[in-house]
Length: 299
Image (cartoon, rainbow, N blue to C red; front, side):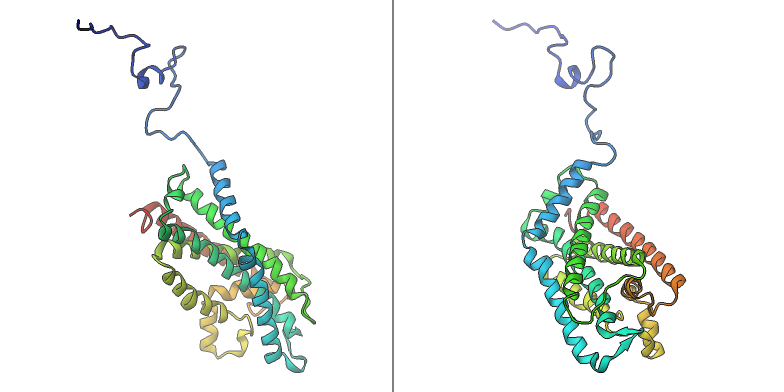
């Protein structure tokens, strides 16, 4: 015998019809398909991504945190012996005190770049990038989590390197303007963290990432006035140095310790700080648009 069709009832309706509508007031118990459930900022997801990135570099902290301190201390020893003989003074302080802030800022920037440039690239190479793209995170939240973790590593390296510098005889890290130390340190870390994320989006293998490090980041860092003041350069090279954003990070950071720099007076330093803020805003916008477009990460 053929079963007769049962009349439609609220219990036999499709779940999309029966459970979406609230029997009391007609309001939807669940949002329609395609409407996002999480509105605003996904705080739990953002925090989870941030902690994941923190734990990633802390698992190898000997390489990511402590090794830069040893390397930077060796830079200080070598350049102090080579250039700081005879009690040489620069900007009214001995050479080790002059060069130490620049080395700290340089280590912070390089490690910020190293951390963020590895995040997406490792996922693309290992085939695990889906773990970053599938969670309910917006492009802005993805960028904030990766960049925030990279800046955290940069700050941690800065503290460790500063502690190592204090072990070297003659180095004085007393701060004349703490605001400049904080501001330029964070601006430099943010700038290189954003550049690292852009490099991670663009790169398809580790050789590409290494090329950016060796041919862009390292030269800009070495030619930023870390070991000298640009007043001693020829006018043409001074103009080139002033077009290098690394120069303003290094000099502004040094101003926070020494109370003077080759940028100029306090007003010039504040203008340089605002210029770095504007540059980082542009970099953040470009990075966000690249993530939204899915270029080289969703195809």
